[in-house]
Length: 297
Image 1 (cartoon, rainbow, N blue to C red):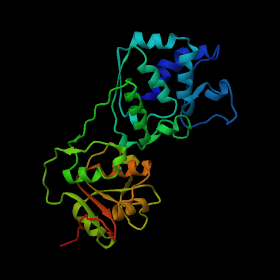
Image 2 (cartoon, rainbow, N blue to C red):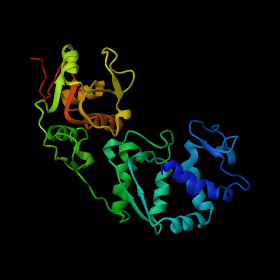
Image 3 (cartoon, helix red, strand yellow):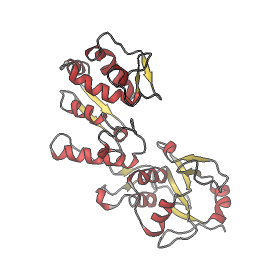
Image 4 (cartoon, rainbow, N blue to C red):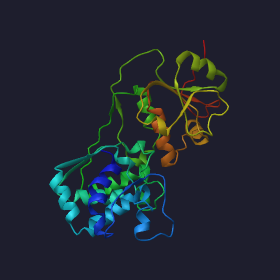
């Protein structure tokens, strides 16, 4: 089940009366928000009794306390083990809930790639902001230091060509202490690795290689008439080749090695690692980059 379904089914629906007597969950309000000064019941539920998505994590966490142990005991009776995939997308009060689960009798296993932290369950909340997006790695390392979790790193990619894997490792600087990626992709196509591409050659490149064209947002790449997909939406995809229209930050990174902010780095990392065989980045001036240019025959 999805994370929101889990919180609705096993936290909000059974235990809402412990917090608001006589109330029950009558739906899920995905887009709405409570009035900024709303309190009590109106903080969490709209006029129809639907739980606001942006407040579901907080409600679920408070119900752990308000149920005086009943919620947690029920979870322990239902589940021997809980597996959380894409754990890097959790945010805000979700981290409090995971702490509760880790302290329970349930075995908790979590899987994720911190370098792909481009989505968040509650991006507007200030709760646990220090663990937002790629900064979530701090949450895990703090708890590993306390003996609460054990981190097992898998640094093998079956998707990306070795040169793509090597380049992707440079996107986050060494202070993040991410492991070196090992590629087991041995496919050879004659156009493999990471390349720079001048604007004048974009049309010929697209015609020859048919890459998936990626951009940061709708405001990027307006000077090219290409079939784009935004970085965030490409998450989870595998493409043989990608063509990236860079932001100014990505261009600076390519030209000088100036590292990106965590969210921008994660989005660029997602874009680069969609490719199995080749990545092309549109940059006219290479600066200090050692990446080769692709040029038409």
